[in-house]
Amino acid sequence: MIHSSDITALILAGGRGTRMGGVDKGLQTFHGVPLALHAARRVLPQVGCVMLSANRNLAEYAAWGLPVWPDAEAGFAGPLAGFAAGLSHCSTPWMLTVPCDTPLFPPDLAMRLADAAQRARAPIAMAAAPQATEDGAPRLRTHAVFCLVSVALRADLELFLRTGGRRVQQWSGQHACAFAEFDRPADDPIAFANANTLEQLQELHGQGQDCPHARQPRQ
Image (cartoon, rainbow, N blue to C red; front, side):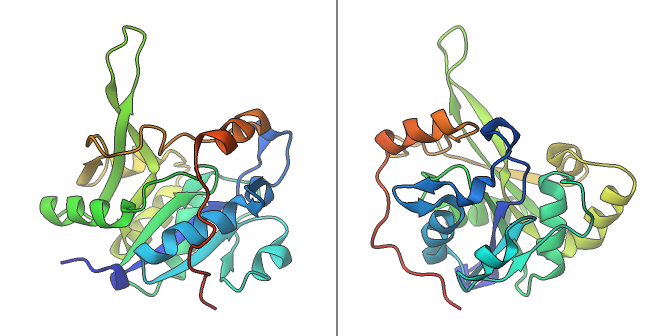
């Protein structure tokens, strides 16, 4: 069984923020709290510990009392580079990745991904949730950066990156990958809504409730 103490969460805040005009997305605020810090507080009750993936403003992130790991190579190589940096510093058997720009992600994310991985005996588990299509029929969409990954895949991922690989699902497709479906009646239909632009972030302000009483990240 995978326990919460077996999982370290990695908040992904290392992107360019291109569609936000190049700002550091993790430092943009959601209900007055930087997105990356909000994500850390939201995921902390689900896991053993939390760390951050960032490539800019490292001192500002470090001031929150959490470990901060930049990509091994410069150039904003994408989320898999963040995965690799996190895995190289992960002291638990499993690592959960959470993008900073999706502030309403499920409060039971880690548990359900762990259950999926355990049932399938898979080293990777990803979230999937309904998304409306043009014909109005919802279909499950994989949210690949909401990913639970075994630290045993660290060397494999590093090799994939060294040989030019960049896409999360291209890498995960080389391994057994389980999927946790967030389509229960009680699941929030906008739990995986993300903010790629400042306008979308403003929309999310009015659609969800922040967690003002969430536990503070441990130092």
